Length: 207
Image (tube, rainbow, N blue to C red; front, side):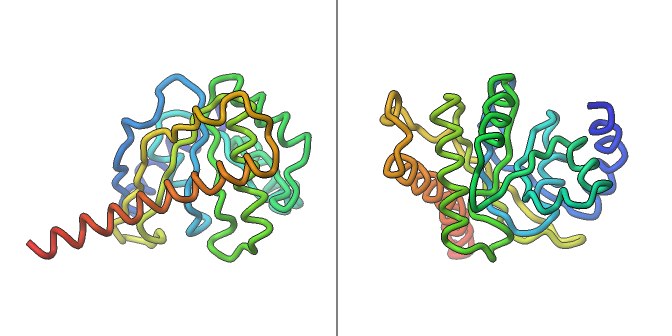
């Protein structure tokens, strides 16, 4: 905890200057309750920028291969990262995630995979993982979308949507079919943020 806030304090101002980011819809984040933040993945800076603009320490699912280097792995763990095999979300990962959500913390997940270069099987595993976490924990899923890939001194926006309504799935068993349906709903809500933003931008230009 101390390490996280120490790094956050040091990096806060430089990140805001180097990577200007406007967060739209922050009011949709539950203040003191658990939530799964599902965001598109454009660069390695994605989680860092989320951390720098949210005044609460979230946990994040990170590719297990990043933890092979003991030094770097230790830093990731201190930042709250949870190792996950994106092609096979194992039992230990599920237990860790459910424990995190039981403690009313936020979990950041990039269900579309690694920076847009992930195969369909891995994307499906990630989407199903998000769906399973939500069903098992009762945590709301909050869709998020980076408008652009973060670049130095380029203004960007992070869109945060309203919690996804999954009441129709309450009490259902986490079968492959159910998880796939929820996964597709999550994807559609994320893309809806992007499409609404592009539509608003187009309407402004046409006026």
